[in-house]
View (cartoon, one colour):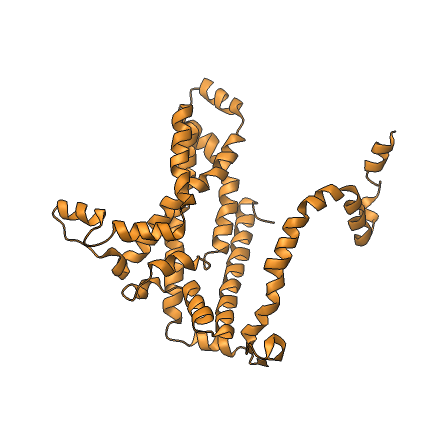
Length: 320
């Protein structure tokens, strides 16, 4: 046996080694891979795990002049204040309303679009259609909101021109609370659906062509092959992404909502992320904002664990 084979040979009783010995063995054996992962590991340690030290200000009356360690402990005071506030129910209702609305409408769209793209046989048209649907993802949020303001303007917006041309009444969409969720969700679907198809297209690329050939010989139509071959191939990916979506259902970004928000639609647009931004960065209530953010993160973690456990039990597919 050559030296290289001897070097790479696993010990006969690797399971008998202690935890420290196994770590040392794998680090020595796969050190190139660990070096490759090192930048990502450093990134998460510095920008994700390191800042968790500051979470303790949610339980303190944080004063910048005293620092984190010098500030007074107040326990769950900030949490009780948030739970007993008059805006608590509205924030939860708006956050869940937008997130669930977006999940119901937005989650199936990339799946449908990926299945449609997979059925296209004309190479040029397929690439052109994918490029057109991917492009909105690269438009900045500020530009997207600017487009919405321009298109939906009551006086100059093209949408209201069409409505008026058809004999309808012009609508102030962005000022009407009942339209806010729909505009936010539909614009997000337009912007991100094409980009989100990439992972589903990758899953479809792994389908064995021989399955389609055998099904076609047996007389299966394209629709039947789509339902009984392509769709089942997407189920594991769909479940994983669904679990991850539930794990962030309370954590929508605040940038787009904040840009679309105005005093007239605040009843529907005020969500936990914008409230945290207002309290933490505008009003400088750092401890209160940290408590609200920690509550939000805890709810997301509970939802993630719960949905993962349910899907693991039902389908035997999960994140772990």
